Image 1 (cartoon, helix red, strand yellow):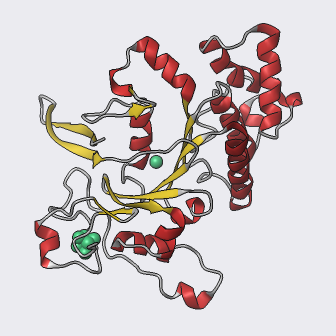
Image 2 (cartoon, rainbow, N blue to C red; image 1 turned 90 degrees about the horizontal axis):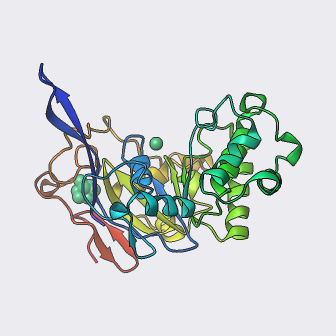
Image 3 (cartoon, rainbow, N blue to C red; image 1 turned 120 degrees about the vertical axis):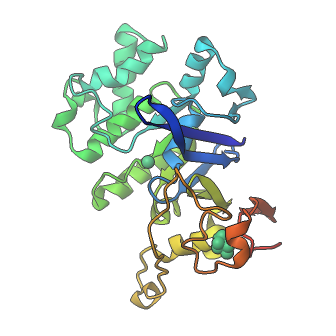
Length: 314
Ligand code: SF4
Ligand code: MG
């Protein structure tokens, strides 16, 4: 609820704060049990920061994160450790996020040890199960991350995240660093595991083509704000926000004629340290009106959709 994360910019000879990068700038949404909520937007729009705030891997500036009725921001160390058993993350870069000096068995076994879930032969057995679960095979247990391909390394990252039997998993662009040919294998694995283990996903991606098949609902972010949120199919077939429309026009189409309708935005994303007044999208919006640079549109509910645009009225 009303989640903000501002990173101070320090300057001058005294290193005083001279401004702030408004990475996440007042967003509210729910993630329902068992669903996949896709979160999309260009790089730097605040989607990864949002994922980190939800898991409290980053401290928020203000706002509230509630998990099954508990306030995550107010948890003490012990409560936070309990929460981490229920909420895990899969990172974008499966190589950078795996310790190169640890064997696969140690990497996957570590959370079991840290959370006091299993030790000794029981832990070894659980690691074997996890390796089989993600399709690597238990014979890989003594090998090191560099001996694996990108896709296999991401399977290790998934096994590590699932070791503690979490409820919520933040998937932060888990396939962006992988070859296109491997991406669908990993996506399929994540979908299978979700069904098998009853997982809830916050699935972060920069484009809609990755999330459109797997998301129940989709949220679209631009410059630290949510601009649209709704049921996945409906949002794709009938986008209301002009920014969502440009993202949808960027989804590759099998029909080359349809591809011609791609909407190209002028200019770059403005700096989150100095976002435009009014609607943040107004400097690039093809439908911009006078009011758009003067007044910030509210994130309002229209039927089952939430949208922030002056031109969209219920
Ligand atoms: Fe475009 Fe105005 Fe809507 Fe913003 S409020 S998305 S600038 S039409
Ligand atoms: Mg990111």
